[in-house]
Length: 374
Image 1 (cartoon, rainbow, N blue to C red):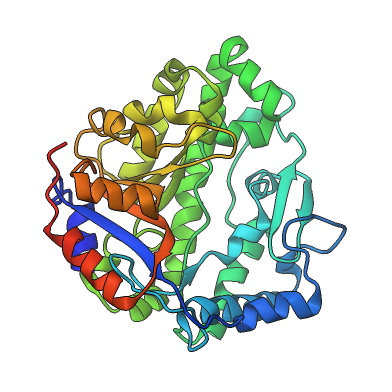
Image 2: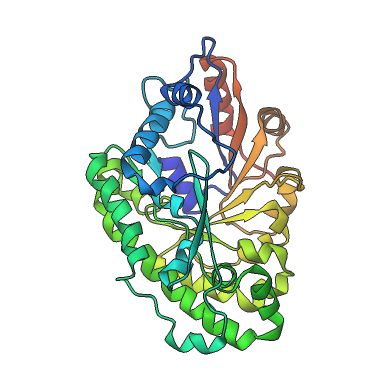
């Protein structure tokens, strides 16, 4: 945990963090994998089934099996390396992004696999005159339903796992939900003044809903994490999940003029944040790195888009000392470690596993001795 804390405090500018696994010579299916196979669960295809939050008991059992596969006695062999082994998940993710529209009276449309529920919301603001009466109310049935979901998992979890608030949805992301995606993008040019008023409502919603969630899970999480310094910084518990997804489809000037300030105010209101960017929005990385108080910037790859890792040195030079996370292969990581070409101030999530625990120990010795020169 100490290395991770130092990383978030920007004290590891010339050092690196890594997480990876160790290959199990005798792998056996976990209880969760057996359950998926025996029940014939559809994990990739949506079909006509109730949202997962309709039966919290079933959702709890699903999470218990998934946690067992990752942390329990039936888990695959894994060296924690710089990963921190705290079971943590976000049950309210199964309400989907459309939930913020439902807070304001919107009609939700759900789609589900057997392991994940998504949602969209029919446009809520179809006339700018509606802005005068647009208010976030804690008493909203959908706000309370989401909060009751967290209360259920706190009560039934018996301090076995930490819980995360749902990722904040604000600014243009919020407008896409409230106006519909095409109309929201058109509003950037045709109705910027009204769009800003809508974004103000989105910011108020994001701050207040996140704080309501945090109030419910805070004590549970502290007892699970059992490390005050880590709890004060870690994602999900202390740092809000932030997104600039909608801006990935825009010129950087749109975020600069109608996005940056809202993310900045959100970070200041919540005391930090973990922002993820997609590779389709790589052009935003130098800009979001300027956010004051940003705890971590995650560089997430998208299918059919250029990966982040090959251009990591370029991005490291343009992001100051902001802690970055990136995905790479085991071969890419070990080659960069050997050649001294891995940029510092970066946490590397390695896809792939070393053969033995001895190999893992030797690799971690090199990681901890590594000092970046780029």
